[in-house]
Length: 173
Image 1 (cartoon, one colour):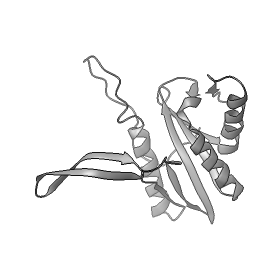
Image 2: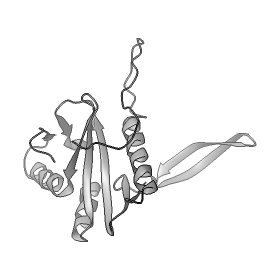
Image 3: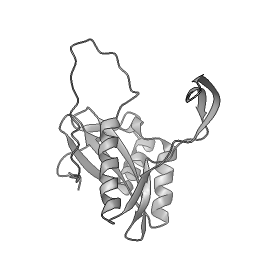
Image 4: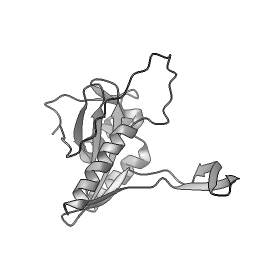
């Protein structure tokens, strides 16, 4: 399990209203924790790590007020690779962050072939690459080395299409 030097809690408040599935802010609390951790690393000269911006092409903007712009239409220019990149002790570092409410597994459908290929390329260049897996049910975060994810992804391609990456406390650093 990875412990972060931040003060943010990832516990969410519950409401009594019926909930519909909305994935718009999925992982935002976890992302805030990672960003706070990266700010700590930067402030204490431990590492320089930043969230990668999503490559978006803005098509149409409305200006309801002179000082406010509202993006009305946009599309992704290209598939995004991983969530974060930077430098740690002279090494390139690159990682993806995934959050789930499931108790013991991350569905492999949450990883895309272009992300796996990007991780392979980072490892080929001797970079540090991994995935942070956050299990919100337990408020626990694990580090999964990219090489292990890549191996599991290859097994998925060759075999079962509905594979799930199962995590146990003994199987992950």
